[in-house]
Image 1 (cartoon, rainbow, N blue to C red):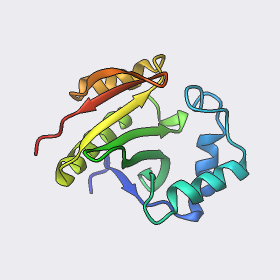
Image 2 (image 1 turned 180 degrees about the horizontal axis):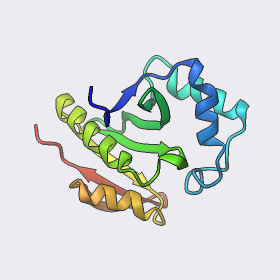
Image 3 (image 1 turned 90 degrees about the vertical axis):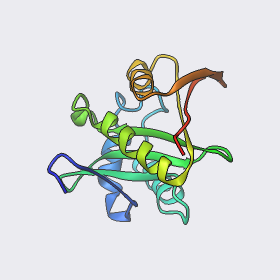
Image 4 (image 1 turned 120 degrees about the vertical axis):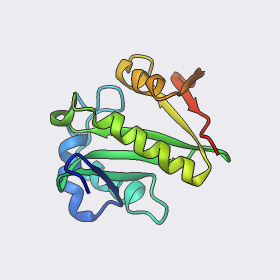
Length: 151
């Protein structure tokens, strides 16, 4: 493992406080939902991260939780990809690294990828387009980008 590696792993209940630090930050949650309380974070962790088939995974760098990765079935042929990172880790290229890692994972699985974001999320759109995703339209007030993964 190189020093710059980001590890994507299954969540643990011990991640609760660090996840709360991410989800309670109004700036992080600006385009997602209102900031979470500790109780909301715990419910989210249990229902989305600790379930049998997780919808989210912990993103870790140097043994520190930096945020989470959304990676779950979107439709029959595709997985949804997203990320939510703690503000102190913004601007380091971590979202791009995560995207590249998950593109490789999707290729192994022979699945396409979809990224959804609100139209105001310029950085997310930039990451999607710079990684070969194609804008396919606005659905339910979200811009949708798709990457046909080489099989």
